[in-house]
Length: 162
Image 1: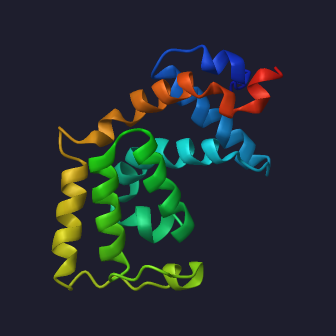
Image 2: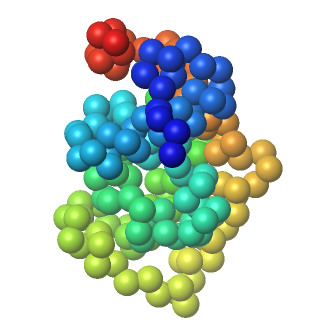
């Protein structure tokens, strides 16, 4: 495995290399058991959204990948990236997944039983299709992350010390 660049070098990259470098950098931090800064967690969760949908399916964002707390982080990050339509669809899907429940514990969230015979899943599947449609905002995530990072580089205090 090739070593990850220092963070200052990652920030100097153009898209899509910047996004790929950032995800690699954060993945190494996670694998080393290091805590993430809030902006790192936001960009990581949102940056992997499309890949996770394509690999595991839309329902698995909620069923396996994101925790209840992380769903809130994802929604906020999408809005920070000015991806409001995608955030709205994500939230609608989350509430379909939770049968409209809004104040769940992590345990309650992870114990949700998927009954795809329920008619609400038709709308859930339609949301998944809309999120993956050719004109979806999901395909703007990478460039929005790059733009956001360039403007908000001071959110990474260690970047100033490298």
